[in-house]
Image 1 (cartoon, one colour):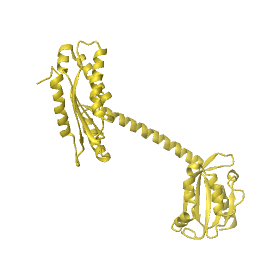
Image 2 (cartoon, helix red, strand yellow):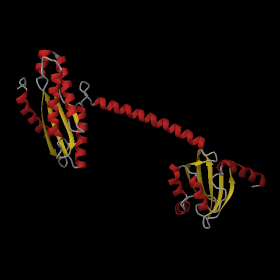
Image 3 (spheres, rainbow, N blue to C red):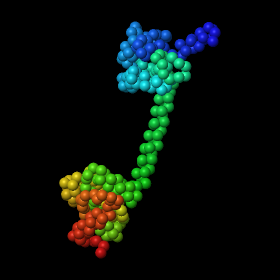
Image 4 (spheres, rainbow, N blue to C red):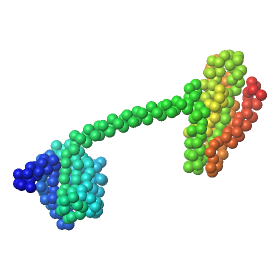
Length: 322
């Protein structure tokens, strides 16, 4: 290569990089080959490569310093460069105007062309701020789009498993969330709370006062169930006037007992505040039992709670269907 071509190559390389250092790994000596004005705040005097890295670290963005510290750890880069010709990282570096700009830092073996190993390396800093900024902007847009799609999916997913009249889950939601609650109870060492609730006299309300009265009663009961159920409960409308509730709770939780009091008090208050010619009521039964190993559904517990609900219905619902 003649001198003219060599000068062109050298000028091109110097134009490409903000800083070029020649480093002797064994002696820790380094020599500045080129040093652009915008990063002269890094170090006025280069004493050793180790001291230079400490000076540069101060000017690296705080969020990038941990990675930069590892990247310039002699044990780390010696190991990497014993197997590879070069290694690089991206970080933000403070310029002389005190603003941070994205740069790419590269360490490259200089002793043998296209071969790993050697005692000398080049330490190169290249400005990539415009490209990196565009990349981050594009990635932010992609994340926003993915987040929007995820939110839409979640909304459609919930709508598909939700009873539109009451806002409770439907039978699709029953399978999905019962599996989830069983796994939660197993992993957290909790018991299963299972409750069956039934609106009293829905057929009588519909036949006597019209379906609007029945809809009002369903809305009132479902609202009280949501308000009164133990924390984390999933509430499912399994039929016109039938509801299931289940949750993973502590074995000594007082919430089920408190739930009973809240439901009764809430419906009593509702009836007192609404001048209807009918009384809205509900019957319910619940059970708290440990989750069994290998358990895949709550059907057995639902059956127990259903029996207890029916016992209450015998006392409370004079319009019950035999």
